[in-house]
Length: 84
Image (cartoon, rainbow, N blue to C red; front, side):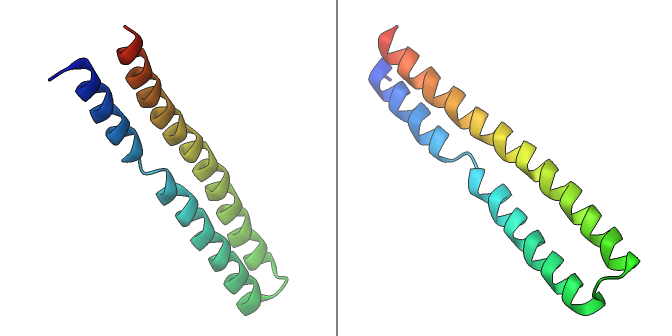
């Protein structure tokens, strides 16, 4: 396999990093949060559930950032491979 082919394979791998999954999950959690609020109203139980959902959302943001970093690192490896 040539260096160009290896770089191309790395670019394809970068495209496979599942960055969209984290964002989709966060969207689903936000929908759940709205449904909980709709069912429970402004109650302490709803507030506790919303707090848990918000914490999960922040953690998902961290995972999304980490996944994006993986994607960028693979892309950088592909570029470096071509320059090397």
